Length: 383
Image 1 (cartoon, rainbow, N blue to C red):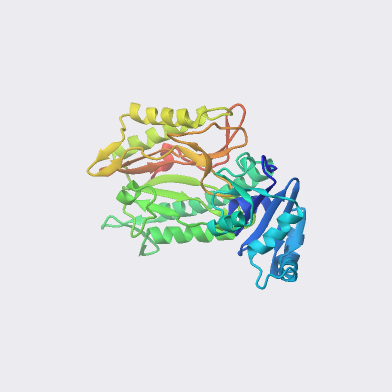
Image 2: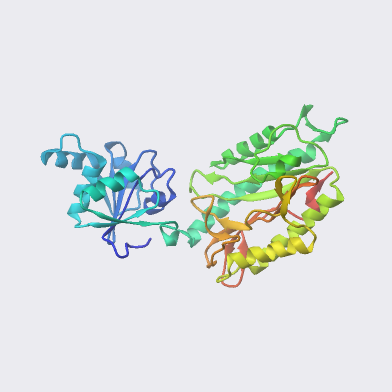
């Protein structure tokens, strides 16, 4: 983790269960706000009595301070009802820290209060900790483990689609009941829970629902239509995310939908060929888009909707599901150790949707795929 540059201390006041920067700095998941200070090489947390003992055992920091001890110090100085800022003020004064570096999500009330006490603040936008972007082998293994769970969960859903029967009404039935997006998502979530993983906003979107890339999907599944499955869970053990998408059809895909699948698969393969240390995400995205256009799949407004390929090729994955770097129109330089998705897609109202997404680690010579799940044209159409 970086030491402060051009300032006396890094300060964060947040909830580490939802703030990836704070969790990264402490490796300590807490559901309530707490103070973190990095003054020189010393990493400090100030904890409530409730979490004090656990922090001493689990937090990867140098110093664990008692919040109530500093409250007493403030009262001894005449502060009747010490606030978080009163406690933080004491900690900073003890370390002669006056110029503070804070993240972009630092609370305005805290920032105003510190400035009123004479501190100067510099705000750093994401990535707040540059080192978060380059994953260690331990982090890569954690992400890969989450991806294994994701693969099992997606496999569970596809197995159900394979086992389903197409009835005369054109819908899929499993065990005598209509197969729905909700039922498939429940299967996915239950399988993930077996691996202590939790997913939110899981996508099982069939037909025209899939043309909206982030439509979660609902209702019964029809035969001969695209089914986009996009699952991006977080591990409850490591807190690292994974991300994978597959598209299948139960029955026979239309010639256009089949051509879309082949084009997206080629585009994804081209994107992965270009990924390596030093590569430009913007150039990769442009090349991926060029593959799709060469195959005749253009992007633009049609019937009042964006259609074609209108999202990025990829994004970083780690303690957040969406992290830098980006492989899109604005891009960014890829470095060895970055973990990124590669997920081109095509979306047309008259044909359906296709998205194929793998998760890879950038290396000096290329990339290493963390995903081990079928995606060939023979896996696209399910009898």
